[in-house]
Length: 320
Image 1: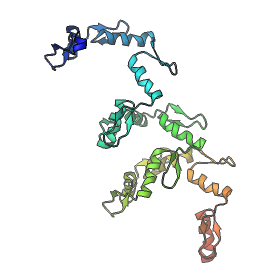
Image 2: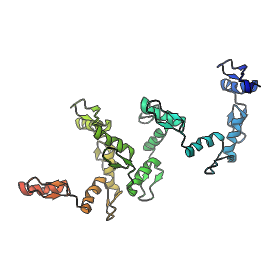
Image 3: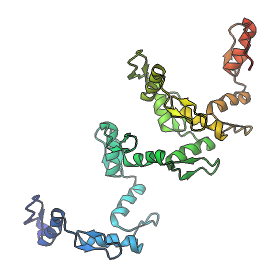
Image 4: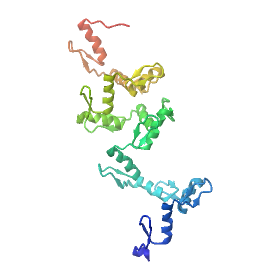
């Protein structure tokens, strides 16, 4: 009858939680006592309730009794099936109170909240860099270990994370799924779109303490500061040349490796830098954006215009 009346006469003396019967109270008490009387005979892991042991045993047996009626995918526990069903229903019950973004899982909401709070509880023990989620720390650690388990099937380039490989593959496919709603420019990566958006907002929140120059991004300010300090912390392990940014170092390394990941879709010529491919494309499009202010002649590239201007000024190019 207590099921119908809602009566819960059995109370936990530790946390005041109430239960309908003594059995459920007894099960609850192991949370406070830490008692784990149910032991797995395969791996010796212990559990506080028999139900948890039963679920755990499916890891060893491979049993998946809960089946999705939509796609036939099977699961070892009902909660996993329930979570999976949200993919089909589109249900996102967990809502961010700050920006109203919705999530399928509470764990995803918790991770998202670190964007608003700025909390970075996961710290690298090697270089002290901090991260908002454990996955990013795990990915970051591969920088120190040198581990790159994700291989590009097109050019053989290796990556430390599947996310980096996915972004890299867009170089080969030409896919640019992230579009600016203001000017319709498209980008391969979401982070590049975010950086681009600051052009439209003119938001420059980062100020150089030495010369007062303002920047829209913190990394741009950091790179700029090195022009004052002369610091070049990124070193090429092959020739010893130093660079202000990891991007410049990465681009430089292609000189040694011979890697040319940027391909012209018209003539199949390969390039080590995206900028070189972009300049090359003007040959095919016949785009001539650089104009001589003296005679009005148009050029595809700024360096071609510069050489041409010397014919007017009489300045001689330096031959090596």
